[in-house]
Image (cartoon, rainbow, N blue to C red; front, side, top):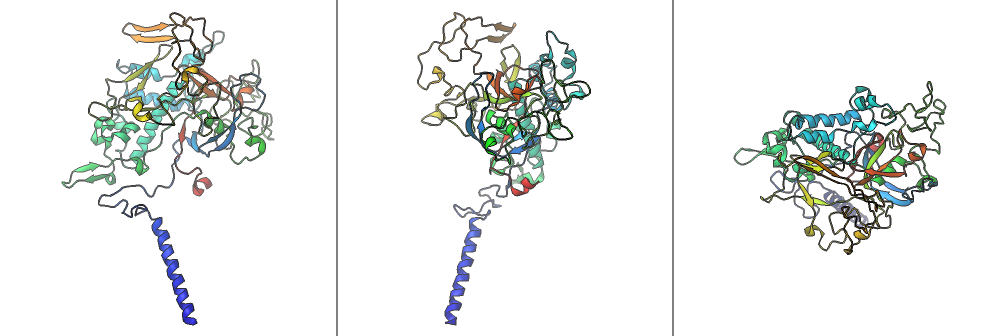
Amino acid sequence: MKKMITIRILLLVALSTSLVGCSKSSKSGNSSRGTGWQINAKEGGFQYNTNFKEQETAPGLVFVEGGTFTMGKVQDDVMHDWNNSPNQQHVQSFYMDETEVTNMMYLEYLDWIKRVYPPDNPDYRSIYNGAVPDTLVWRNRLGYSEVMVENYLRHPAYKDYPVVGVSWMQAVEFANWRSDRVAEMGLQEEGYLKRDSNILDTSAESNFNIDTYVNTPTSTFGGNEEVIKGGKRKIKTDEEGNEINVYATRETGAIPLKYRLPTEAEWEYAALGLTELRSYNVYRGRKKYPWDGQYSRSGDRKTRGDQLANFKQGKGDYGGIAGWSDDGADITNEVMSYEPNNFGIYDMAGNVAEWVADVYRPIVDDEFSDFGYYRGNVYTKNAIGEDGGVSVIGIDDIEYDTLSNGKVIATGLPGQISQVPVDENETYLRTNFDESNNINYRDGDARSSRFFDDFEEDDSDNDAVTRKMYNSPNHKVSANDSGINRQYDKSDVRTSLINDEVRVYKGGSWKDREYWLDPAQRRYYPEDMATDYIGFRCAMSRVGSKSLSKKKRKN
């Protein structure tokens, strides 16, 4: 009997040992779970970063854990816009700028452009001029504001104030530049790029672009191999002893994600600051402000009566009386002047309204999409050159766009990859998209119907009646050798200002009444124009898990 018990114990020990062994091997980072072959072997084989833990928070950003929320307004619509009907949406986790982009942040961008593309060079003058904010937005026919025109952007007294006078298109170009600079710094720290290459070696012929590095790294910095080569551990030698540069790939985890404008759903979700709030009213969209409560004034004993945001108090009242300025500002205010919301984000109500990525339409089509909603997708792909490789823009191929006001802005700079619309090679027999431009999809416009082709083209020269639902003015601007040619649309059959070039902006500003502080409010403005009350902040997508690790959450 004792022998039988002993045998059973030995069998159980052996079985448990084998199970533990199986468990360890299935989770091993050194061998493939699919084939059993060694991963990251010194002598060739599949190379992959099996030690990657979690996405690092990029400079200036805070983490926003995604979830479901009621997008839109359930309060009374006193303006009768009927453009923000409540609908349930789910937002993926992402990162958002802690503050609005400030004057000093934008001046750093302008300084880089001035050094790389000197405006005194006629070939580059339009690049710098197209990036400079429109300071004339401060002018008022019946108000004195020249001090703001001359000083608001550049004077150090306003260095931490939100930048204004920036169009949606300029904000997008800033986000692209910021993506490249942060990626360049990260690759230097990882040893893939030479230290301080952004300062020592950057020029119009040789600057860093993240997409170019990923797709054709040998073309980065104008193909200057000496600039690309970095730390010793990122360089190996071939059989003859020659140095071979090792490039970062997506698999290394060293390629950071890009900065971009937040989508409208992301911005509204982040503004509400729903973290750790589980009440029924909050979940169902009855949270009126980024802070808790139904009032715009503080109820705390020390600050009782002070406004919790910077906005217009009433007619002729932008900041209270002398000696008791209850919101601390008359125009914009320094960022972080008011308490953040529960996500740790500042000024999501008041100070300046903010650009978001979406093209404006009066409806949010939650019937088609209630996950990561965004209207404005225009799918492109890398242009292919005659040699079969991707087409990198050279100094003689800078791409410009002439705006509706005649201003020229650079949309494709040297070192970037030229983009073209996707075609049938990508769309054939697909069910999720069938064309490059999807801005008009399901927006009520008959022209956007999938098989609709019986319509009259809009022709402002002969005032032909168009069947487009959004029949906006069609101003024509073109550039030629003699200057800018402007043709103003004088047609009297226009029925709307909505078109594919107007973008949503969210939140109230220093110039708005309290009504507009509600994160659900939405307005629109032409993407190539700017004001003295619209600024912006950047966002970044999150890869991997929905939530932060316990260690990061604790910190």
